[in-house]
Length: 232
Image (cartoon, rainbow, N blue to C red; front, side, top):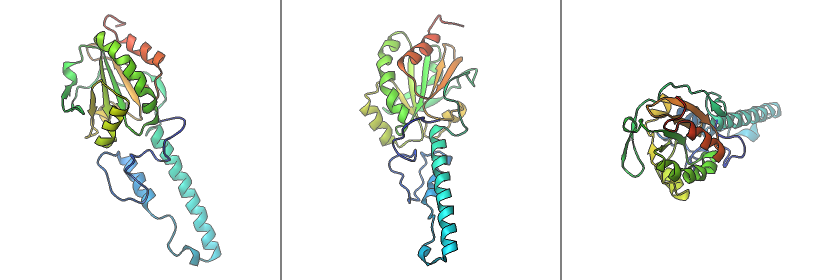
């Protein structure tokens, strides 16, 4: 799922990945990298103009079809591999798997030490358009809910470290941010698109998850459902 609506670029890749570049990146998912390799391959033969007219026509039609398929695949990747459903969904996990990751500031975040408090886990990337829209909303609510005993955690994925840090600086994010460089946590949590949020009650039970952009009203409502003393 990544975003309904307007995309910042036709392909959901970090800015350093350009068409025609065969350089692989460990920070991209396999589906993204596969698309990079396909796009990088030449569509038309170098001696295109030397082809007979019927062959030229066939080549152009095939090339146009390939470009259409690549565009469709790019949109599918932007909206989430696997066709995830946008909006609130029933939690696919009964309890949040524990993990330990390094924060962008170098500190260590150990989920097992925090799961006796309400936890908001937010999977995001710098190239994710709705992430750019809702980052200020999340940051605006963070001080209020921090004072109420909540934990906010941003999990950066499929990203370049410098791009993630620039995003944090641009939107002045002050809640903890970790990097899922090994892409292990998002697999454990079954994340299929960005942004995806998990709302974890004290004790580790996942109450709900949300895929897609969150507005302030929706975010408040889901956060309040995992408040200490809230619904069992």
